[in-house]
Every structure is written in structure tokens, then in C-alpha cells.
Amino acid sequence: MKQEQMKVKKQAYLILLSVLFLKGIAFGACMGSDRELPIRAALELNIGESQEVKLTNGEIVRIKLLEITDKRDTYRNAIRGSEIKISVDDEMVTLNSGNYNLPVTVGKVQIDCPVIKNYYSNTNQDRWGLSKDARFRLWPKGSPYMKPGTFVYPIKQEWLASLSQAGNEPTYADWGESRESSIYYHSGFDIGGAEGMDEIVSATDGLVISSNNLTLDGYTDFPGDVRPDVVYIKDSRGWVFRYSHLDSVLPEIQPGVNVKAGQKIGYIGKQGQSGGWVHLHFEIKHKETSSGEWGTEDPYIYAWEAYNRQYRPSLMAVARPHQIAWVGEPVALNGSKSRSFEGDITSFEWQFSDGTAAMGPVQKKIYDRPGEYSEILKVTDSKGNVDYDFMVVQVFGPENSEHSIPAIHAAFHPTLDIEPGEPVTFLARTFNGGAGNEIWDFGDGSPTVETQSEPVNRKASSKGEFAKTIHSFSKAGHYIVRVKRENEYGYTATGLLHVVVDK
Image (cartoon, rainbow, N blue to C red; front, top):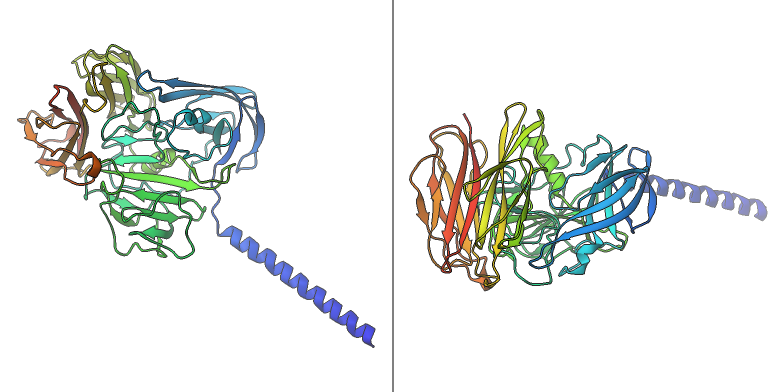
């Protein structure tokens, strides 16, 4: 009798364990289904190493890293570009790293290289969590970079309406570049704008884990500092999105609140460690790195794709990143990152600050005087669409101290859907410029206007306001607005803005 009771109890116990085990599987599957998996696969390789990678559509490709060559300036030995030679299923291709580059299609994949180990040679901080010589991201051929409906452009603003800083670009947009050998290769995507005017929105659905200097219980590990001007939002992928330098954060954006993609979270500003120029520092971090440390998921391509989906531009001109050089040294200007969505690009026209012009996507220019220049790229496609962008070039002479060359940040608001006669606010702030006024030329034949932004205190650069002026355009069209200021050393900084007035 006892043996039969023991047998029954044992069977009941085994059944209970089975039920619990199956419930555990169901719970685990449920938990797993709550997490959105990215479309891209990722891997790291050393030179000479190859790996097979399973794409998210199930296909398998073999990637081999063959060679890495970086391109450095002679001013501070900063990396300005790179050539990463790889083979994809034995087909050779060359990539660049960060710096406004989009993935390249080869075989059955789209692939990019967000970072190479070479940046560690003179960076001031590890922002990538890279363990090998290079990191790659791979998407199936023809697939989106981010699942449609899960990601929006994080600011209500025209594409590249002001200065910007992309992933791995040496920072420059406030005081200009210094001669420091320890370099901040930018992490994330900086988008310049008009202080307190441009709306910042959440790029994804997610949980607010920090805002207004408060953090959600249970969250102590952040990929950066917690400040009043910073909002952290965690999405269903487990990625953490950082929005920094906000002028103000909406009161309802509190830790523990769930937000939707496109929901307003605040306004653009220059608070915190902004360097004094108004911008959104937009960054994606996760720990899906070989080191297990926080690493940057370069957001430029996701922002580019999201803007494309939302605003459907016919043509996007891109003349960035900025360049730096000595007087008399050739500077490469490259507009080949531009894209047409309705036809083929038929012309690249460069209009230089010295009054000359040149045709073709890649040009070289030599400057005979120090200063901050901004060169115009006009792109036209086969459907007659036109777009403009600008390349900033900072030029130094051997006699210059690093802060004698002025730098200017210009912005305007609104940037979208401007109508004839509508007032537009223009703003400027000059760094390293204690004398003179900003002189505005609105490109419509109207008289020039002068403003004077106050000197910027390097130790308290977030304080003070940009100089402002208001202008309206009487007719529809493309306008190139130019603002210049000469400092006490006789050097000039020039900023350019592209204003589109709709019919």
C-alpha cells in the first residue's frame, strides 16, 4: 500500500514538474516575444578573420575583413575617413566608417562598418565597446534598416537644416577644433536647431527610465550621466535612447511613463555639456557588444531612413562631414553621399566662397587665408529636383592659436512648410569672436541685416542667448542665407542656411 502511495505521489510530482516546466517555457516564450529583435545582424572581426553570419531572413553569408586604412589630417592627426576592404561571399567591397555613410549593397546583404579599432589610437574615451578591429552591421538585401512603424525622426525639422555632427566625426560645431591630441570622435548624431523652438519627439515607443534628473527605480546603470536636460527611453529591443541638451522637458515625461513614437518630449536647447551650440544629441546605446559594455548603435542611418519615410523628399543633398586643413593644403569636398528618390542625380555643382564654381561630386580646394568657410553644394536630378547642402571647412595658419579662428552656428525656425510672407526667425552665435557683428544676407535681394551675439564664456557656454532677427520671403523658391562675422584678429566665419519657401 505504501509503495502504491509513494508511486502515485511520485507520478503527481513528475506531472507537477512537467506542468511547471511547460509553464516556464510558455513564460519564457512570452517574455521573448515582448522583445523586438533588430533587423540587422552584427559581428566584429580582426583583420584576416572570416565568419559566417546568419541574416535575420535566415540566409547565411561569409564576411572576411581584409584590410583597414584610415585617412588622417595633418592638423591634429584625427581620422577623417577610412577604407575598410572586405569580402562578402568572395565578392570584394570597400566601406567607410560612420561619417554620414549609408550601408552598401553587395550580394545578398546591405552592410556598413560603424567603427574601426583605429579610432582608439587617439580618442579621449571608449564609446563603442569594440573588442576587435572592426564592427559590421548586416541587413538582408532590400530590407529596411529599422522595422517600419517602430522609428521616427526625433526632431520636427527639415533634414540637415543646421550644423550637425555624425558618428565618428571629430567634434567642431561650437569652438571649432583644437590641437588637442586626445580627440572626441562624436558618438551618436547631433542635430543643430533653434533654441526652445524645434520640438523633440521620441523616436520609438518605450519606457522613460530617466528624465528631469530623476531615474526609475531599479535602473542604476546608464550609458552616460543623468541630468535635468537628458531623457533616457528604453525601447522593446532593450536599446536605450538618449536625448540630451534639451531646453525643457515636458512635465509629463516622467520616469516610469510609456511614450509612443512621435510623442513630444521637449524642446531643443544647449543645456548641460553642449559646448554652447543649440542641438539635440541623439544616441542609441546597448550592451550587445562582444565586450558586454555599453556600445553605440550609430543612429544616422536610422534617422536618414525615418526622415525619408515621413517627409518623402525627392532629393537629399549631403556634403558632410566637415573638413580641417592648413593654409595652402588641398581640401577634399565630397557630395557623393547625396541621394535622389525619383530619378538619377545629373549634376553636382559646387559654389565656392571665393566666387568660383566646379562641377562633379568630388572636388579639391586650397585656401590661402585662415577662417571658417562654408561651401555650397547644389544637386540636381533627372526629374529637375534641386537640393542644397554645405560643407564647413576650418582653415588654420601656423601663426594661429587654436582659438583665434572664429566659428559660427546659425539656425532658423520654422524650417518646414514655410509660405511666402511667413515670418522666419534666424539665429546666430559666434564663438572665438569678441568683436564685430553678424551680417546677414537673405539671398532674396533685400538689404543686409546686422546682429551681435554676445561673447561666449567658455566655462559657462550654456548661458546667454543667440542673436536673433526675423525675415520673410515674398516668393516661393530656394534661398541660400549667408551670415558672416569677423573677429578681432581679422578672421571670418561664415554660416549658410538653405530655406525652402513653398508655393
